[in-house]
Length: 115
Length: 112
Image 1 (cartoon, rainbow over the protein chains, first blue to last red):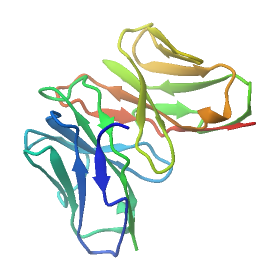
Image 2 (cartoon, each protein chain N blue to C red):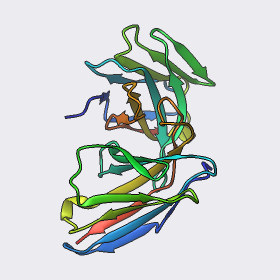
Image 3 (cartoon, rainbow over the protein chains, first blue to last red):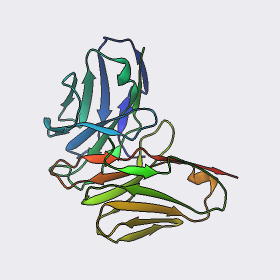
Image 4 (cartoon, rainbow over the protein chains, first blue to last red):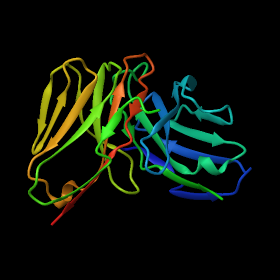
């Protein structure tokens, strides 16, 4: 039990639609990172938010966007869904000023299927 | 292209056997972490190694960080069915971002 929750657990969308995934971090954790884990792959870094500002981004297009709120919740939004977006989306929260070397606590993930 | 290469990708063994999983890279990491992931769940941190040459033990699991901080290994002694899961290595390159680079994982199945 990491204290990080995600919703929904599963989601099915069709190509071109938009989706919002939600994450609730551990209380006091100022940093949240989002990862995409395709089937048979390790998680890939999407972006990180620190105190409601994007703090860095991986190799993902702008249609992947996020928000972080003062109540330790955050969102991942994906526009114009493509079939390759089908994956497990993980959020991870960490304490500290930048997330550097801090332990990241992962949520259970949201399984997104795009048809 | 994965920054961290894990091998083997799949491992199927009998209870009581020993096994080693490898995590290799041409890049240097400030720290390297090992996670275990069960189906339908997120990765759970097992250990973090920080110093080159460091060895950490967690019951029957032994983790080693290479001297050059480019590789790591996970050794399990006398594997049990409860060890079944996906083992992931992840490296931190020491930027202020704290971004983790994951390997593809090793799916371990231990048969009774």
